Image (cartoon, one colour):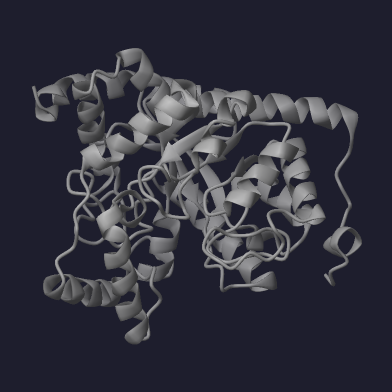
Length: 400
């Protein structure tokens, strides 16, 4: 039997234990396409061909929880990065107010379970990159107060206090201030997200953290040797930590043949004066012309399943999840073109004899558990100490 034979079973499973997806860049796409004008781009309407995400397709995909990324590009810096992050947070709030029958704010694990019981999509936020706090622990706390429930320590570029996976090593992992950021995230209850960071940063964070970590959208480096993926020795640390690695769908991170192709596609974008991550209509025309001249290696749900098989073997079933990165990438796998595609992945895993119990952990239970654990750690730490007033200048000898 092939994966298609398991689609009905996959949809039944998702009706009971819907997907909690770790990373969706819809807020940034709204910025890029319509400068946050939700009248001009309404996700209540079919946005096929324009976006990976709309409400109809979220429902078709069996999504029950979504971490909306409040990402800003890592070439933004200082107060500009903070202001742009606040704009991203604002548009998520406006989306929730506009679509209350389908989307509901979730700040806690209990909120997620309540949303599931109501048949609404639990909506959380994750800040993608520590540049969003501009070296300020008070700003970190303010983001948590505004509802941000994870922060990815870096994006594609290093920070003064943390090394990125896709930059030249600078501090060798986390600096003293970087370690204090992790401790303060633990104290507030904000999940430490280790996608995008260097392997040295992953190991440093795992050595410091008192709470489980997540990888909101990263796959297995042993299956596809890309620096954005997780080495086996780090995956093997997750059972002791309690964290969750959420496999991504981005072809250049999961399909070895797509790595070199994407590098060429990115160079083509830069040659046209565009950012490599640009997914506006103008940018997609450039991408499509390049693809017509240079056929793209195509990933499938089986490609993602290969990563999940390996991640389950190394980290265990309690420590894996899903983080598609929809609306944050120009290219997606065949069969996982948009947020409606999750049943195809679950059907593929069913065809590989994954049990219903295993799949319920992958889709829903692991993500809820890790947020609940972070909340428990935060309550304990808040009883022991108050907010950190440390500065990067004090800890690293770096000017603020």
